[in-house]
View 1 (cartoon, rainbow, N blue to C red):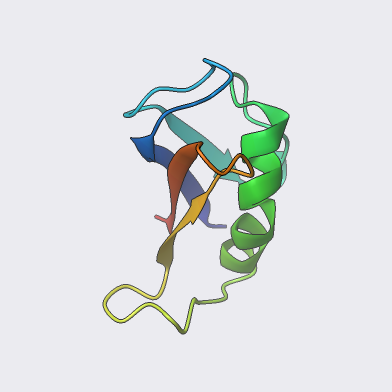
View 2 (view 1 turned 180 degrees about the vertical axis):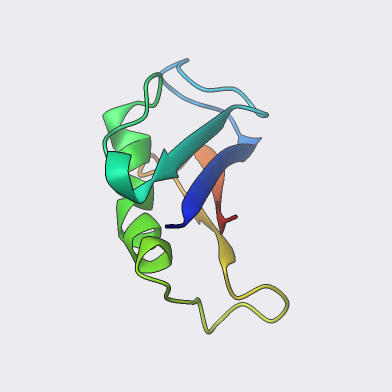
Length: 85
């Protein structure tokens, strides 16, 4: 099965939980909230994680269809990059 990497690549966490460079690894057998990731950030990426775990792609991405970026639910929050590896 696929593994998913979620990286914090930009922005500033308003709650102080995350910093640029934080990396979280998720796999199909263990699709739970990764230790250290706040529920707000996890809730933002969960739909994209399931797409990748089910071998889907992001058609709007021009270069790599298995990687995309989303923002945290907080309008001034972090930017998260989600990628199937």
